[in-house]
Length: 483
Ligand code: NAD
Image 1 (cartoon, rainbow, N blue to C red):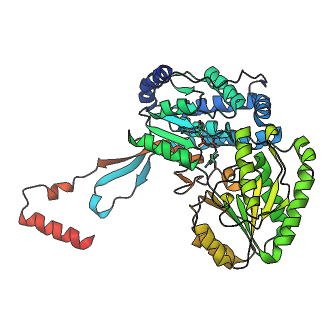
Image 2: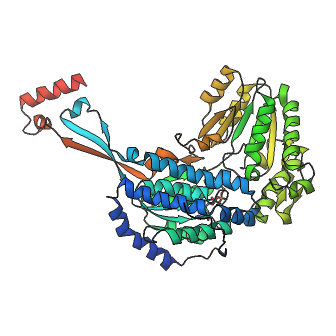
Image 3: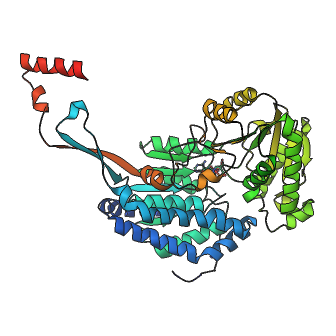
């Protein structure tokens, strides 16, 4: 493996011109056709290159993420570097198997034909990423894109510019531009890219922008994978292990300071265990980050909110809830110019508070007390289908009820966020929280076209060709009866 590189390029998010974007897109046309015949070995060699260069820049990623929003290095390792490395290793191990044509059994209508599904590259692909895990969500999908034999243009998020600049430098130094290119820029760059007739778009970001992406893709009938967000609820019933739930939920929520698509957005907790849960959460927060705003700001383990605009947005949600009568159970202080809001637990939130309907994506955690699980399920079903739903319980009937009567992209029972880490599970949302899946074979298939292939062994269809004699009518009658 190559040596450690720790040097940061200048971050500035230069917007590429439309002509430059078009030139790079055009340059990938012939490559995409050539890559249709690329072998597993060739694709694995490219994934290995990506793996090695990411490992070699591990410290540079720490540095860049700290500059962007004081993200703790341990969280960069856990949630940026490790997922890419793990996706790459999984693909390198399994790619030959994934690429193998999948034979299918003949149906009674296709006796005499040998049939299979062949995974062919989609062609020229666009990957657009969000800022919150800019590396993981740019380079993770890139692994699947390469595995499936495509070219790629990646548009990382402009909101974490040091990470984007570093990735752009790495990609430029590692791959030829006519095969894999990273184009930095903001919405205007994204808009220019989305106007092009890509063969597939893999977008990760908000549901609102997901709709913009899907509308742009519709102009060319480009297929899309949309990895979106939303409000992910957590249910804690009376039988749950409260200490474990508090520790795990605080970890899932406050890693990246609540700026995680699958972080618990709000908690429904049974009235009989609410006080114990709140107390356990307070203790965990104090142990992990300190108690006062000053201590928490000085904590090396708590990332900041990504920028002042988002700090103001989150603080406005808190102020609106408070103005309408919500109660702060812990935290509650905001320093907007420092991009800091305390880890904050709130309850007594009225139905008309904005925090009830908007994705929080920050360090606020509403806690809603319940006494009847049916009302919780009704409340969840009244909202768009979430990306994640978590259940903390030791009561099988409650677990089954919550699982079967709701819909969500993914669910953990007595855990949270780890569904993302399982390389064999499809990762994705449902409707408002996403379309399609990522990770492992599911990512490979997202970037592949499943081509149906039929080859004649012996020709039975002749029995149906014109002229339509009485004999052929009899054959048709038998077929209709025997289906
Ligand atoms: P975003 O949708 O604002 O931006 C994502 C990307 O789209 C960025 O690269 C941005 O430049 C581009 N973009 C923004 N507005 C655009 C427009 N009008 N037209 C074209 N492109 C545009 O999302 P974000 O703020 O970077 O990330 C937060 C959101 O992403 C949250 O909703 C979160 O839940 C979601 N998210 C989902 C996943 C997942 O895997 N499902 C992962 C991380 C984040």
